Length: 472
Length: 163
Image (cartoon, rainbow over all chains, first blue to last red; front, side):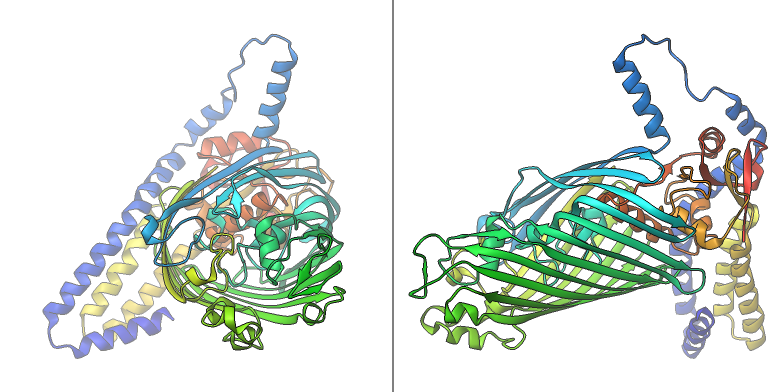
C-alpha cells in the first residue's frame, strides 16, 4: 500500500515541470512530519537515558518502597492501610468522570432551552463515580452512581446506575464463563453499556437513531441476571456473549411520554420480565468487530379509572418493545469505520380498544460513521444517521391520516436524518474537549418533554455542541 | 535505542529524496531502503514480558497474553489473581508492546478497559509512570505481570516466554 502511494505520488510529481514547487511542498511536508515527531523524540531520549543506567534502577529497587511511619493501632489506620494496600495492588479501584456540554440549536430544544433565541443551553451535565473490588480471584463487586442533568427528562438527581456481583465460573486461557447478578447495564450495540461516559463515545450526542436519549432510562440498565461467555481461538478471534433476564426501569416521565404513543394516556407503566442478549465477534487484532444484540422488553400499562382514549374506554394492557441491532466496525491505526442497524418492533395488546390494539409497527434506524485519528491528540469524525419511527410509513403520511386536523404538517416528527461532523482534542489522557455540528432533517428523536408543543417544532434544523470532560 | 530514533527519521529522508529525483533506478533502491527501515522499527525486540517471582508460569500463549492485557483473563492457571501493570498510553514501550506483542493498537486497549470499568464488568490495569516503578511493582506485587526494556530487567523478576 505504501509502495503504491509513493510511486503514484512520485509519478504525479514527475509530470509537473516546476521543480521549485515540488521542493517547496516537500519542505513543507518534511517540516510538518519532523514537528510531529519531535514530541515522540523527546520521549525516546528519556527512555534511552533510563535504559543506559541500569545501576540507577537497581539502586531504586533496593530503596524501601514506602516510607514507614510509626502508627497508632486504631481501626481507622487499619482500614486506611487495607485500602492503600488493596488499591496499590489494583484490587480496589475508584474511577469517575464529569462532562459539561453547551448546546445551541437553530430550532427544537435538545437538553433544555437550547435554541438560539434562548442563547443556547448548558443543560447537559454528566457525572459518574464508580468503585470496584475483587475480594476473591474470581469474584468482582462493582457499583456506579450516575448524575445526569439533561433538559426536562433528567434532573441531575444521582441514581444507582449499576451495582452487581460478577463470579467467574470457568476460566482457561482466552475462554471465560461467568455469571452476573444485580443492577446491570443493558448490553446492546457497541455503545450502550458506557453511553454516559463522554470518553467512551464517539460524539457528544450518540447517534440518536439507535441510542435514543428519550427512552434512555428504559434502555440503560435494569435489575438483571446475566450469563456471559468469551470463547477465544488463537487464529479466528474471540466470540463474546451475554444473555440475561431483566426487569427494565420504566418509571420515568420521558420514557412514558415516548412509549405511550396516544395522547392523554395518564396511567403508569409497570415492569415485567424481559430478556436481553448480545454476541460480539472480534478478530484477535480487534480490527474487525461484528455484533448482534436483541431485547425483548415487556411492560404493562395501568390506566386510571375511567380513562378514555379517542373517546373509547380502555383496560390494562401490555406493551412490547423488541429491537434487534446489528453492529459492525473496522479499525485501523488511524481510521475506524462503524455502522449499526436496528429494526425495532413495537406492539400494544390486550387493551380491549380497537385502535390501540392495532398498534403494531416496526421502526428502523441506521448510521454510518468514520473516525480519523489525525494524531493521538486530535480526532475527527463524520456521520450520517437515519431513523424512521414506522418503516412502513417513512415520510409520516399515514400517521397524519389518523388525525389530519391536528397532525397535518408534522410528518417530520416520524423520522430524522442527521448529518454530523466533529472534532475532538485529547488535551491529556484525562481531559478532553470537543465540538460537533449537526444538520438534521426531521424531529423523530427529539424529547417530547423538552418540546411539548408539536407546532413549535421545525423540520430542518441545525445543532452545534461543545463539551469538556475529565475522567480519572 | 538510537537505532529506533534514527529509523524514524531515515525513512522520511529517503522518501523525500526519492520523490525529488527522477531516476527510476534511484527510486527503486530508495524505496527498498525505505521499506526495509520500516521493517526494522517493527523488529525492535529489546523488551520482555515480566512477572513476579512467585508466578508459576514461565510460558504463555499470545492469546492468553492478549486476554490478560485486555483484562479478561483474571487468574493464573493455579487460581491466583493476575495483577496487570502498564505504562501510560502514550509511552513508547507501551505502544511497541501493544502493537507487537498483543497485535492491537493502544487506543483499542484503552477503549476495551474503559468499557469494562464504566460498565462495571471489569477493572483497569494499574498504571505506572516509570521503568523503576514498573520493576518495583512487579517485584513486590504477588501475581503481577508487566513489560520492561531488557536492559532494565534484573533477577528479581521472571521473564515470560510468549509462544
